[in-house]
Amino acid sequence: MTNIVIIQGHPDNQTQHLCHALAQAYAQGASDAGHRVETIDIASLEFPLLRSRKDWEGDLPESLQQPAALMRQADHLVILYPLWLGTMPALLKGFIEQVFRPGIALDDSEEHKWPKKLLTGKSCHIVVTMGMPGFFYRWYYRAHSLKSLERNILKFSGISPVRATLYGLVEGVKDQRRKAWLDEMQKLGRLAR
Image 1 (cartoon, one colour):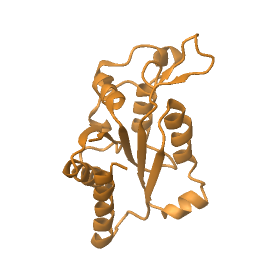
Image 2: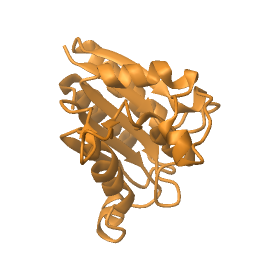
Image 3: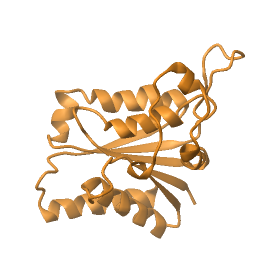
Image 4: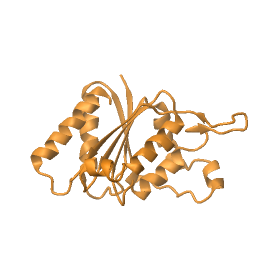
């Protein structure tokens, strides 16, 4: 059994979006395969944005204590979000800045010349939805924000391997194509990948 934490990064929890459906499909597949699944819905959390190094080095807000604990206990993370202006929505970035801090993701105490990775032994699957074709995002834009999340945050904290799935041209997608995406997410959930 794998402990899986799904981080639902769509900032709108008033309307169901493709990201929500993909997360639910992944969770269903994982649960059906006997994995333990927890979901963190970023849009339902209240937390301050970091505005200084002092904030980042300070205490984690009470509202993020449980999500951070779930992430520490997880074997596998799934991060889902829509691509907005070439990157993740600001609310998800704010969450990541809060929970990937010293004492949770890194040990940057003076005894280490380089920050010690505290999230080793975990894997991650990033799922991004977008209006443009996925191959165009990878080819023309070089998937820079995805690479930044993978390299500068996840792997820097010790999370590896990191896989990514991109769903492009999501606006007005036909039901058959949407069903294929949901089936794929259920399969990935069963495999805990």
